[in-house]
Amino acid sequence: MLNFVMQYQGVLKKMKTENSTEIQYYLDMKTDFLNMNQLLNKEIKLSFVTYECLNCHLEKKIYRQGFCKSCFFDAPNAGDWIMRPELSKAHLDIEDRDLVYEKSVQLQPHIVYLANSSNVKVGVTRKQQVPTRWIDQGAHEAIEIVEVPNRYLAGITEVALKEHVADKTNWRKMLKNDIEDENLVEWRDKLKAYIPEEAKEYFIENNSETNINFPVVKYPTKPKSLNLIKTPNYTGKLVGIKGQYLIFDDETVFNVRANEGLVVSIEL
Image (cartoon, rainbow, N blue to C red; front, side, top):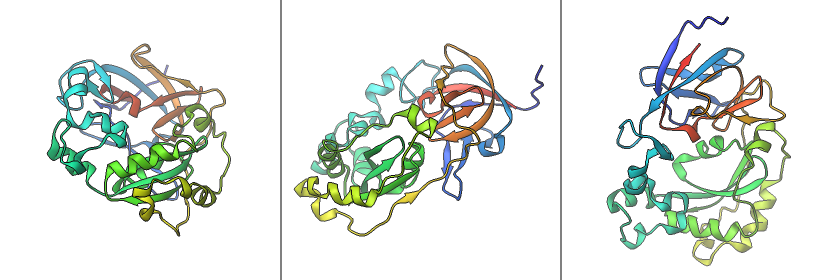
């Protein structure tokens, strides 16, 4: 029988990352900050405790993206423009849920990028989120295509480019490390012709791709996702971290970000 000697409890939020020779991962457990890299090759017990909405902080069942159902449909940081940047309207002074908040997020520099995690895909992020966004997606290489002054321009550029390149990641392929290196500079130059007229002047002519290394001892061959609601107690040896996934020795994987809003205990 395993004897766990340390216990931490807190509401799950996506792991914070530090870009280094090998990505460093940190999990905020309310009163403690766990460096997850230090837990590699150690047995961990994960247990579901309850729910806590990331917006209202009430003990309410999580609906999507770490929010309870009412917050998901009411909170300004859960508007449709979050997932679909082309719906952004703050640049037109048009409010969705809270114009002050929307202006603070939408009216700042955004990057349209190519990332290679399971395949080459196009995506959008705020400039200040580079390279965090790429790390969260498990991309081993990425490159910026355009830098625009607002989220709307980034959104319409992404919509145009995804007619010619993927916009989704195959999480199983990414976790199996079943990947091929691509020349993202060539991809960037090839896609230049499809950038909308409004964003053409923001094309980035001369840059190189960023390479990212993840702390993985062993990749799974048949990753199976842990549902902590259906399986409220799980114990396994941590053998890797990629994207926002914890990878265990028995090929179980746990997506921290997809489980935001769950209160869990971690025993070491």
